Length: 337
Image (cartoon, rainbow, N blue to C red; front, side):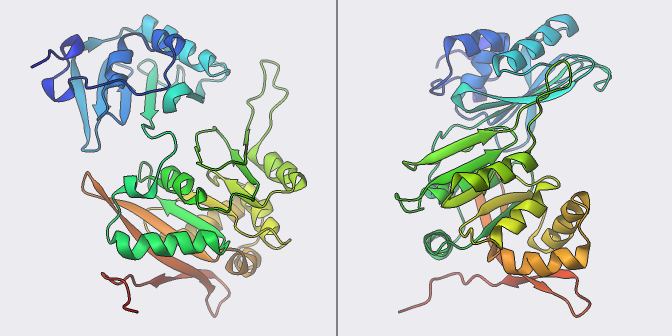
């Protein structure tokens, strides 16, 4: 049996490194590089106390024999952020970047992080994900339903908790868009990989050291509408851009897709209301537009460590004009023909 690198427990012994990580990125990762190499690891965390944890989909575990002191951890954090083309310092202590090889890095420095640098690395192993890689429950039922929704250009709202696979599902679904379509993808941090011949990817930009040059997601939504998209795809709605996105639905842009953070399909209306509030939109006014904008809610949740469950829902208005959702029951078997 091969020895695990850096005294990592044998259950984390390296099999083969993920493709796409350049020598420069590996050098920036320093002592974390060999941990990132393990194909079972989905996340690596360096805590402010210098302890390294990994997540393999079954919870986080400390890595034995690896510790990074405060000063080198700060250098590590800054190096990773700079490798992604952004900057992090005391004036701007919370930053995330997307690096090559499917790595997404988030850094929190002092004074926000009280014990020392906090580094979170998420690893996307499949550069262009496929639906069958998601290990969905009842695949014979849900996968045809999902593909049909894309092929008929339904507007999709994909919801789920952090780490549920929203981005992976969105990327896998958009591969079923017609090859003649132009997909314009907007993200705060570019990470969507879509197996499609015509993808335009736009990413938000952080303000420079003088506080100038910021490009927000709201700005990108408005600009993208001038680029003649066949489909507008927003990686995640987190704020006021929801108003511009819903407006796009009502100006003839079909097949739009985005994701939101929600712990259940029933929680989606409340989440949309909070985003509308950030955009300064009255909840009842927003409800009228949202019901007509989104054709289908697709909620994704993890079941255990391996499989995922899909729930479908449809937005509606209550008699009081508030936003609500109707959950669609999924049969365990496809309907017989």
